[in-house]
Amino acid sequence: MSAIIDQVTRYPDVKIKKLSKRFLIMHKLSDKEIRENILEVSNLMYQKGMVNAYEGNVSYNDEGRIYITPSQVCKGYLKSEMIIVTDISGNILEAESGYAPSSELKMHLECYRLREETKAVVHSHSPYATAHALANKPISSKAYPEMIVIFNEIPLVKYGRPSTEEIYAGFADVINNDFDVFLIANHGIISMGDDLFDAFFKNEAAENTARILTITELIGGEKALSAKELEALHMMRKEHRKR
Ligand SMILES: [Zn+2]
Image 1 (cartoon, rainbow, N blue to C red):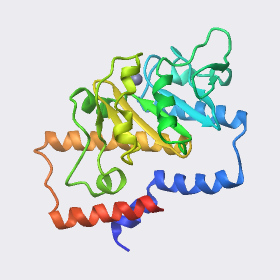
Image 2: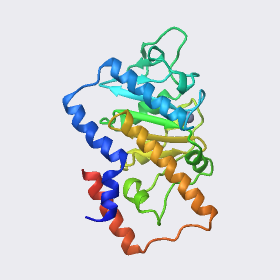
Image 3: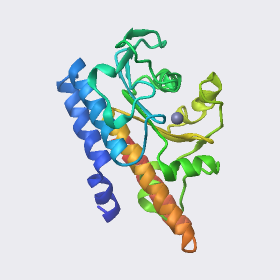
């Protein structure tokens, strides 16, 4: 077993994914647990500078009941009762007075519609990933093995005006092409997962990768691996995705 496989196996995203799959078989999350997980992920995102009161949102699909963070509330100060529940069409089922779902709810619903097994969606405006989105540059590397094995690349979806249906018009192109993390041009980044932590860790890993690649550009640019090595890494990714 190569060192890279060992590193991938130790990667928190993969660990959580494996743990959460086993956990899900045994235990369906209660309403309380879903809300607690959304608060925890939102808090982590706020602490790490990935979101603020006006940007970013987190959702969970509990068999057609969509839990989503409210509009205009700082993710670091969310309370359980502020979380909105809608149906899969976006009709509000539960909402505390004074709170409305994020205006980006439609993006989350499109993710669930396009890939039914997705349980959670995390959208952030984390700085390095969003900088790539503003520059209309996919996040990709021919030099960073972990990036290649975990993400292949993080593609770019075409721009759509915020709060309109245009915003998710390009999602099918990437989601139907086996990507679960992608940039939205001139906007931010979305990750989809088996649970809230899986989606969060992917978003966090994408930001870290974007940061490393940006720094690499500043110090002279990456040195690409050989075509043979890149092919081997892509094969490794295929095996990794089967697990
Ligand atoms: Zn956004």
